Image 1 (tube, rainbow, N blue to C red):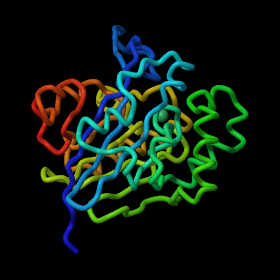
Image 2 (image 1 turned 30 degrees about the vertical axis):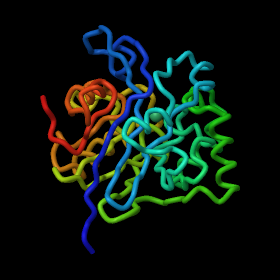
Image 3 (image 1 turned 180 degrees about the vertical axis):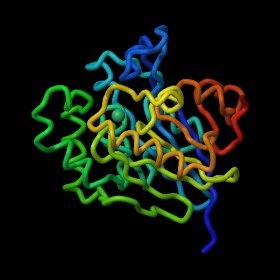
Image 4 (image 1 turned 120 degrees about the vertical axis):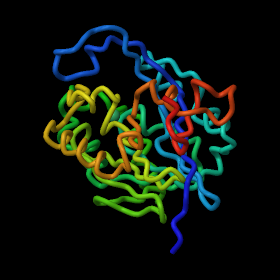
Length: 265
Ligand SMILES: [Zn+2]
């Protein structure tokens, strides 16, 4: 079978100012401003459009004092994707900033790892620090999608389509999945929160929201193995992604990055 080649986009929908020390477990770092960017991503071929993560709603953002720049539907519209027509969504994990807004996706099937739903609805959620990155309204919203028959569960690695595969990574959450996408420049890995910032990977100093540090380091290894090079590995929350990859149109600079294009810096 001929492998499909995808265009791959990162679209920024929100941001959060914070100091660098909050982005690393080990505190041997130079402090200073180091904002988080929040993205949804889209893989698009001639035959299919797959959205990777759905973002948080304005209401959830307000509850957590996060500023939304544009809602998910408006972000997707920037590259001509109609959120109401999207048929396939990969949820990398169920943290509030990755898995919300289900009402905006009436036609979608949501691809999720077994382990993630078990984690988000199981005994560890009795611990406040562990449930903090989850939003009970979004978690129950996804449970409702299960009961509508709209969630496709995976147990480990899976091929969603030729040229687009899912890979289970522990560490940050229990059932995070990264997405490997065939583009015209080779295999690109959407690491999501397996790698928050380039600097986490470069320094081997992870982002502090971690369930299992050992599995997280193994995830770094898997990301590197699946990507054609370090320049094919896209972290989940780094604003630098928008500087390293060109926008599809000049007016989308700083908002949309074309991950299927070679990095510009
Ligand atoms: Zn996360």
